[in-house]
Length: 156
Image 1: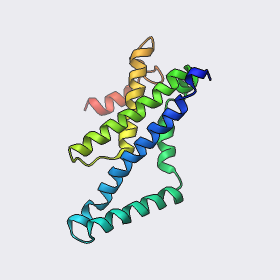
Image 2: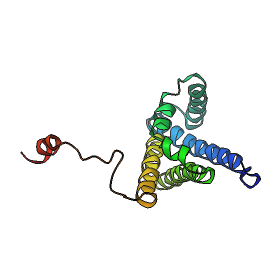
Image 3: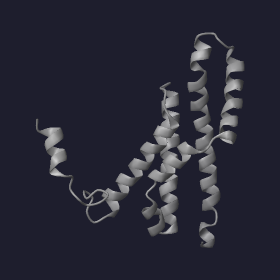
């Protein structure tokens, strides 16, 4: 790693922590909305209760959701491009997810941070395919779908 890129891992860590911070707002809001609205629990107790159990979930979970999202990342893209482009990919993923989460929070719309991150992965993959490859329409394998699938779905 070049000395000029030495700060990038720290910047990436900061952005990842910012995403987790925003994610916490969404998790807490989604988890406590019903119990607060129905007056099952007082608001302060519900938020503290949610925070404690979200923290326990992080400590005790298997990480299946994080693993599922990480398998969506275009590994070939990360490994075959330069260091700067790899960091740009991850920055784009996280910053897009942060902006979307803040926007949906400001508009008081329920949103899933996991789905937001998945959408960011798809968006970055599509942008890379369209802007940085010779043919932006090939898709992942470059092969056409079988005729039977077209006939089955489109021609009845």
